[in-house]
Image 1 (cartoon, rainbow, N blue to C red):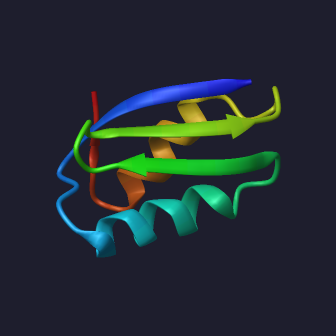
Image 2 (cartoon, helix red, strand yellow):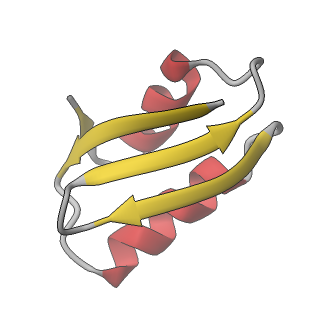
Length: 66
């Protein structure tokens, strides 16, 4: 399943690496795509990875999920 989240506060390659690394470590995540231009994070993941888990993980990195 794919989930696309709007994320504020991302501005550079460091942001991309921080989010990709944190979300990518979650069990059940297959891929993470971060778009600075669109301010989105798209995650391909298994059903056990909920939107709430994704939001918390991204927010723990210091970004706001809308």
